[in-house]
Length: 281
Image (cartoon, rainbow, N blue to C red; front, side, top):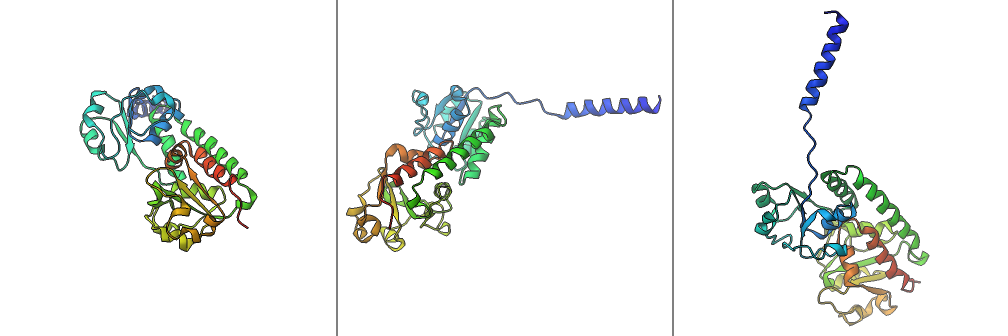
């Protein structure tokens, strides 16, 4: 055999081995269970809503998911009901108690967690790849990124750089600089009075806001909450005296709290709050 023939034979053999060692592409899942609202929303935002066969109890967007079976949540997923649905992919949060049980039963499980905007970006592409649509997550993220930047331009000039206190769950916790919500505030050009060293969502008493003296208070209508003027000591806050506070509706709160493909809507809710308030002097 001539040297050129041996080279050609070697290349053919190498190509054959490479092909044999490359795993066959996985079949895209057609029966998906999503156990977190942000994951349900991600599947739908990526154009695969019709593949969902069950969701958690809190998922409510888009409207087309409302008739789907509910199989619990992060702390109490109904494993038996999930198995009975014969899913070929289960999406859940990294802290879900059902993760190990579902894996042990042979189900394909993808556990995801989002603590930052970069995590949201990563999760969208991870889900897109699992759906057999590589690149779709990155494209979705680029659109979200542009829309968040557009919301920044809608912040009234008098509010740019101002200090914000955003509380959750009826005032039981607050969103700090370290949280993905805090990152949304920062991208809008706002300052957060809750530092990241306290954790992403620290439990803070009412006295914290008094000490921080924010320019604006953003509260929620979810949970047992008292309007800012009626809270002990809060009448001393400039933001309360000058009526620089607003309350997110239950629907707005859901959007703000979900680390998924609707962070542009969360940003819009904050901007809407500021647009309806007098700027600080």
